[in-house]
Image (tube, rainbow, N blue to C red; front, top):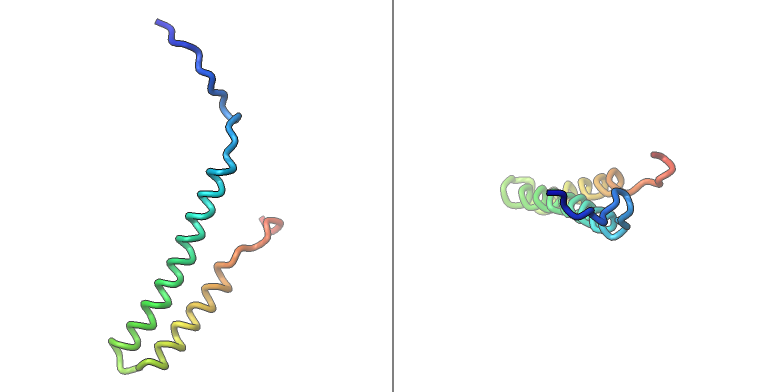
Length: 79
């Protein structure tokens, strides 16, 4: 009982849309995680410690700035 030959040929499909979706999801995950981490640090220091608002704001801003510097995209020539 041989089945009908498939019209699919491995490697012939255009995957640009799938690549774009993958990069979008990874970007949202990366930047969203950074924002949540900075916000969580700020709120924790502000409400749960005697450090207060200003210390929490400065610490959150430092984490956010360092995260942006470390997580930004680099050129493809480095790979």
